[in-house]
Amino acid sequence: MSPKYKAIVLIAVAALSVAALVFVNLHHVRDAGRPVTEVESW
Amino acid sequence: MLRKLLFWGFAVVFPLPLILTYNVQGTAPGPLKYYIFLGLAAYSWWLLSILLSVRPPWLDRLVGLPAIYGLHGMLGILAIVAAYLHRDLSYSPSQLAGDLGNWGFNGALAILCYSVFFMSGWLVDRSRLLQKIKRLLEVVFRRQLSVWIHRLNLMIVAMIWLHVHLLVRVNQYFAFMTLFDLYTVVVLSIYVWKKWIAPDAYLMGTVTVNDARGSSTRRISMDLDRKATMLQPGDSFFLSFQRSTSVSREWHPFSVTDDNQETLSFTIRQHGDFTRRLGDLESGTRVRLEGPFGRFDAIVQSRDPEAPLVFIGLGAGVAPLLSLAAAHHTTRDIHLLWAVRSPEDAYYRDVLKEYESAPGSRLRVTSRVGRFHREDLAESLPVEAISKGEFFIVGPNPAVLANQRLLWRMRVSPRRIHQERLTM
Image (cartoon, rainbow over the protein chains, first blue to last red):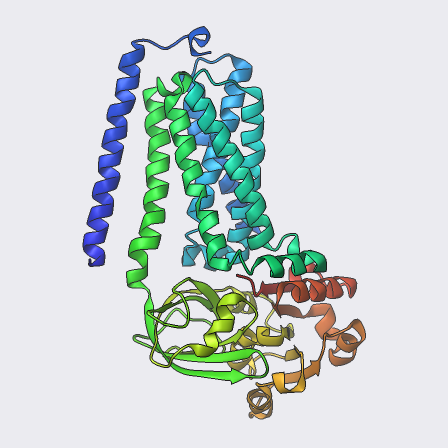
């Protein structure tokens, strides 16, 4: 595979990873619904 | 010095965005927040350590590979200390998160101990007993195996990343988690780029000569497909021999022996499991070259132009000094001291004589069998060279350290001593 295509694959995978992680992080916030108190988190 | 301070200062600054973001968003009570900061610092330092392992040549030109690897190692230790305090003082509400954190910590500690012994030379280079033990153990724990064990640190980072994602006391803060994930993805992407894409742009060459020099040294020359325009005297490259039946493709650093940008020659001492197999390397083997690396010529250019240069080459360590001598023997006072194991190991005697007798040459060469002692240096070097000269020492680690101590005892300022150790 040429370096150009490798770079495209890498950038695409990195961008998709960030998008997926943003989705997961939003999900965590929705799950909590509000900031979790320290007592709950312990 | 200022560059190195800024470089080390970057290690302090690197975790701050993560810590400050958590500080703004997090609601954990005072002490717990600080323990979380310690965990964040440890994780950031592991990431920075991975980032340094890609050894960008531009950073090498600024601070040098020894400083890069020095910080890489120190960050490993600092991260373990911070992670230990974090683990000991805080508590994980999730069983899986706690287990991942503990496995990550224990794994990182084990890999750190392994790497300090087999890869760093911090302890082994200072003890003959440890050198013997290491040599025995290297029958099993070969260099390439050590590199792969070291790479398990990536698994540790993955474990800690998951550990953080499972903790409700941190994963509920969107901005913080996004920044945390960006740190991870950017660093790992740079690492993948370095291992997978960057080598395609490296210099390529073909081995043309592979000769024995002395009892345990080889001179390997290669024609490059294109000129090494960035090459400076005293530089080194990491080499990877492609599709050779005698040696594997693992990367190893070697210093360039002469001052030619089209054909590079390397003088290689055969003391490790990889270099011992180089005797069978076939002519025509393709080579990938990463680099050049090195700061010797930049140091020569930046210091007092009237100060004599003292080159101390220990065995095959003379290689980069030879290219420096070739470049500067008519413009600078150079004293080249070359210590060899046996008379037949003085394989560059003729080349050095040629430089020494060239018109306008200011090079003086002293070679001897065995190490230089204090009286040898006092006898071979003029007073001005000892009091004002810039010293460059290259050779096996223990020998370089011994010569460095010798120069300290002769009151040569550490600022005037520059060294390159033949490691890896």
